[in-house]
Image: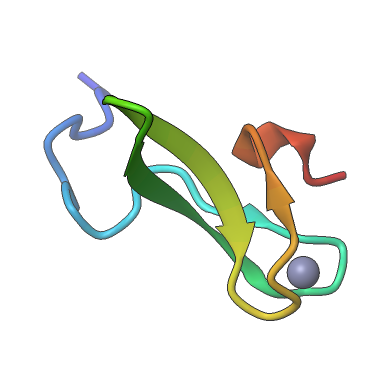
Length: 56
Ligand SMILES: [Zn+2]
């Protein structure tokens, strides 16, 4: 029964990604061109990638 609690910490960043600069990468949602777009942005250097996993 070592099931990691799936419901823990919802809303406080389930996946934490770090930019190479050391900043924290946050997901952003932008409503543009009639649809929601999501991108990942570093809080520190403002680098933007399509996915958090692109920060490498
Ligand atoms: Zn950065």
